[in-house]
Image 1 (cartoon, rainbow, N blue to C red):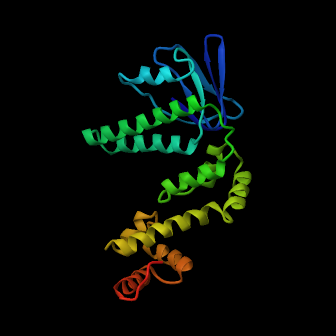
Image 2 (cartoon, helix red, strand yellow):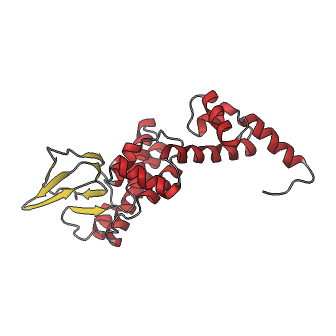
Image 3 (cartoon, rainbow, N blue to C red):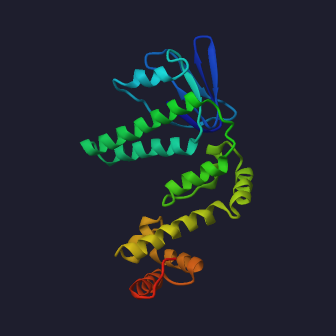
Length: 241
């Protein structure tokens, strides 16, 4: 399975040639002679993996042409990339049974997504901003790369940024910061983790920088926010907000 996030490529099986562009996944059944290559002018950027197992034929049977290669238009390319990244992350940890089970789970999640998208058919990819928001909500603690987000959506960075700002009223970086701060607030009031631990959990390696960002959003330090909330919770007159 090959997921294209930038540029383009081709796959040829016999006399048939398929063009692979951003937002598409190429599924090649096992034992099928083929050749694929990147476009020389706009070489592709791809995520790929091999899936093996006794149930793979069932997955291929859901596709329109189980005996040939199949090009699937992804309804949520961000999810596909994140799922492959998760599988790789588990395999990079170690080769213990728990890690292998977790990696297999991610692999099956990708298979299910491709099968579902293939059955549903193309949807025009008319909601790149919504897809990006969903991706950011799932991965808010990871580094943000606007160019990669735009490529995955099949848009130029400038066009993607304009659409995102129009839909959300702010940029990608600001949106991500708000997501991180929302999670930080929750952790500060529901756990005893230190400010540094909370910072790392929401994607900041520097606790002092995290504290400055927190203050710009909330007007107080993380520890101050925790103290204020604790005082409100202990007050008999406190009301839910």
